[in-house]
Length: 144
Image (tube, rainbow, N blue to C red; front, side, top):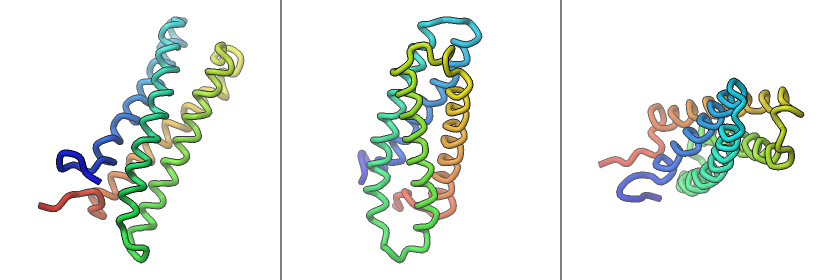
């Protein structure tokens, strides 16, 4: 599926990455400065990242459906999908925890930060796998 000649998954995948990493940065600033507004912006960043991940995942699944069931590249695609699902779950848990406990950085600081670090690792791994799909396997690349 394309928009203005670009695959929609490749077009939308940058938003969840940037928003998630912004949430991590803002949480770090909130912890170092004790600013409640900064932590609230981090919460919204994680929430928007979750929504953007959902949108990018839908477009990715549509693109994956265009591959033949016997395509040898499907193992690489499935690894990328697994990373995306992990990110959806982790990011969703971060949003839930912050929504459920407004003082999550006080009450559950280390589990929350550990989950956030795990999510950052999932972002990096999934992005790396996505780069492998594009540059090594030439998936999502429109040929002229």
